[in-house]
Image 1 (cartoon, rainbow, N blue to C red):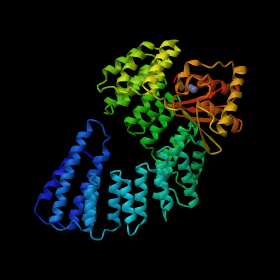
Image 2 (cartoon, helix red, strand yellow):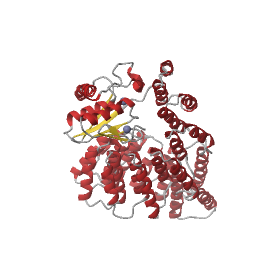
Image 3 (cartoon, rainbow, N blue to C red):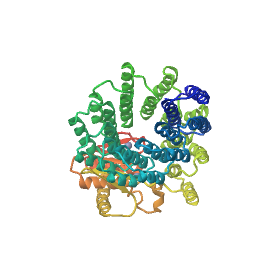
Image 4 (cartoon, rainbow, N blue to C red):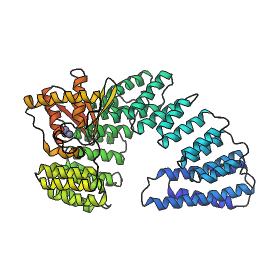
Length: 586
Ligand code: ZN
Ligand code: ZN
């Protein structure tokens, strides 16, 4: 990791070095310019942009660019700018600094640029987001090797030009494991899981041995999409290919199982891990346990980790505090929060404060949570206030909810979920006039609700459902099945739809059936229609599950005698025999 004093020192050294009037060999110049390029790339990648950091970064860019220009001048004086290595590193240096015109100029002055120089100038174009320019250079290249193709591919992926990336990938005369991993991870990271799976299957057919990056990329797609069956196939493949000893692959596998809602498989992977478990392994397992409502087990694991002399980091503490708040363990939560600061010397970040607000809020200590926010040494962000609003919703505290919503309106006025949450609080309290007022203000401010979707895997194919009109045959099938289910639930389970959650679907006008067609209900109905009996139904939902859907899932698990696992935006719900693992507390 880049540290500021060291870089300042390097910069001033280099400045002195380059202003000294002495002759350097081409290799010296290359080394100098390369160190600028590395420095620059470290500077631009190490910090997450924030308002405080921006001016600092700008200064850093200017400083090293200035030194870089000095270096370039010196190279010119000595007639070395067209030298292959010096020129290439100057191109990279200007590229890293975002000065594409200078990069191009240096490149044009080079006598016989080799493939490395061409790749450097293409990378420079991508660095400033100029895809067209990069493509033009690529088309001009008199010779292309695999690296050039991979540079173009990676550039398209970085710019999220996925269709262009796909086209480029198809055009490639030869592909290596880097090309495959770039395309798979590119699609997976941008949420196109099916495409990622498709490319992985092609890779296997192609006979290429997948590398660590492809495997972790495709496993992460499995976890995000909740594709349990595909995850199992991958697991088998990893075992057979003898790749099970790689710790990062194990971590990805564990994470995928846990996100797919199969905690026992996640545990199995964790217990069978071959070498010393990394901090990522421990933390992933703790997150999995906490998300499934096994807070106390997560805490036990934390102590085991401490005994194994693995040092926890900030993320470990986030999962630990999350575990405490979801298990209602206030005292332990406070204890760990202090331990993090005092014993492990980890400065609490905004996420840790958020966990503490959640800890108090969930347990019903709303006033304490509210006071805690005012005592925080860093200004609370919208997420902190939203956590508190969520707690107000769980405990039906209308007064505090209004105060909190005011703060949220200052920070993030157009967030639809805040409006929906507040109106749901009003609806539960029977304050229909206020519900109408929130609705009106949403319409006036043209605030659109995030559309809800749910995914289910049937026969290794992912199906996505959205509420709304019946778009196709699949939707029609789900609707028909859902009608039958609701009827059966009314007769056998005494189900009455809960209108308090109507606002969940505010976009869909005031249809009578707006609650009854939430995407998770459709996905479950489709699962019941298509999956064989006795199979667990696994659903991934992008928003928080509403009360009515929660009731329906519980009743289905009882009436149909099956298990349903729903991963919503914040946690897992395992429905069995008419009750849920969250104990109606989410
Ligand atoms: Zn719902
Ligand atoms: Zn639940």
